[in-house]
Length: 370
Ligand SMILES: *Cc1c(COP(=O)(O)O)cnc(C)c1O
Image (cartoon, rainbow, N blue to C red; front, side, top):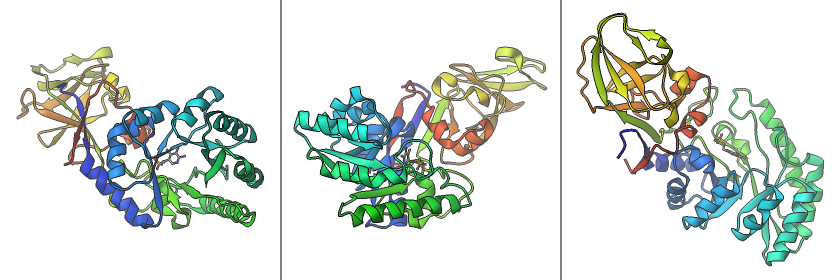
């Protein structure tokens, strides 16, 4: 096995799912976002655990993600959260994936394809209440819901919206969206249409806004152990699921004044021990962590020095060290003193989502129930 690997702590994943379930209540269904290979954790393995934990539905972003899950034998409900192009519709219907629809044209072509394959297509109507990304307008919602309901080969499986600011301390914008969404749901029901699953809440809303739950929630980052932002109260216990590890593969003592790595951006200011780690930006350890990152070895944190290369980086162990060749080094993970993905994200101006998503395909995922 390669020295560099991502340990996926499935025990933590289970605890996070249970914590979210406890927060929203047993009556509310959960659609777990497993898009982007489950935020880098491995979609198939995460989906299997989610199903064992009673998650009702999985959220994907692309048809290929849905096909990968179906090929692995996963039969649970799958919602395609992003829009597709007409070429993909045949397979979406064939693989029994539930598309999100937002226009009369899309509804029309799904209806035609359902008829062609002799299958009823379950659609979720997406309404844009303030995200500004995809979705019909609030005014279009009721007629589109009727159109789905009245089509013999379509079924209205759900009605949904999305929140751009549910992880902000100020909840006013999200509450306004909820108000708009509630009005639409009322109108749909008043028209004698069953809206099916009503869903809006991402992790921020699950943690911050109880009024957002309806009858299904769509957690992503919280299941993987992180809060979507620092602005919302820490009310659910969450444990990071991914631990990014490598090993020391080279150890050397260098004199004061030694330049290190590409661009010679770091020069030693004393005689010091330098460890080489076989991990770099080609593995998803971001190059912006050059001269910034910190790596835990033998329960102590050491600075990354010099540029992070594609496949390797360097750590300064100081003038004396107890670190040995082939010792484990933790790039990020749940156990201090190792940094977590939030800390790395802060260093490079991004969010934990991107830090875990970026762990490259060539890094093997090792699954453990610990
Ligand atoms: C990814 C995604 C989510 C999950 O968001 P988190 O912030 O990770 O909880 C929910 N809904 C939709 C539509 C998404 O695309």
